[in-house]
Amino acid sequence: MCDSADEQCDVWDVTYPIARKTHKCEACPDPIEPGHRYARTASLYDGHWSHWKHCLRCSAIFKSIQEKNWEAGEIVAIDPGLDCGESWLDLFGEPPPAVA
Image (tube, rainbow, N blue to C red):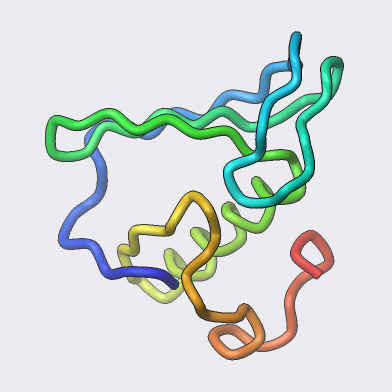
């Protein structure tokens, strides 16, 4: 989903801190409020670092997309904004509860 990739990134690190201030989710309009857990991702690919934050719901969607593609043996570059112009239903069928 999103874009094919020739190879995997050099570093992929996801942590789940508790917000001390309000953050913006990379993929949805809902704020990540202080006291709420969220996913913070750091990725190093081709010498370039990328960082983004997701609320737990969007993090579950992102992770589910990764798992579906890994199951299919595909390496993909998923847009952190989850705005690929594709739908879960069209690509994979009925979504799991974490995605629905």
